[in-house]
Length: 150
Picture (cartoon, rainbow, N blue to C red):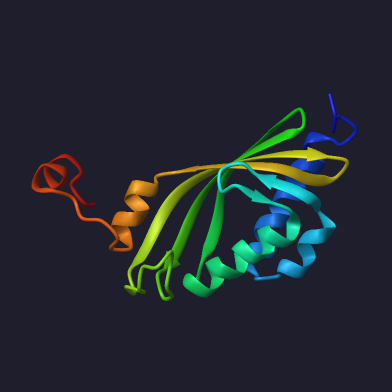
């Protein structure tokens, strides 16, 4: 299997460097450990430059965006991470004006690593709850009863 030359601990360290770069807004460091032809399958992003542009947009929209790693697991050439994302909606997002709403969101990322570089990524998070928290959608009365706010 590709990527087996890297140890599981080295693969986890590479992914943790990604979160450090994101949390410190150091997008220029990504080229050290993210492949130029990186593919984000969830967001349909292709290439390191497009990934950096996505990050810059997130930081403009949610300037206090932060990911806290809760769990990290490596197997073969993949690393799974369970995170908590916190942020405040302070800029326009997909045409939605800023609300000032703060939110915390659970997120799971999966990365594939080959020769010390992150080459692919997938993300799973509750986007319905995210859009609710930034004021893009409102629950119906039935929805409010089913999904009582915490």
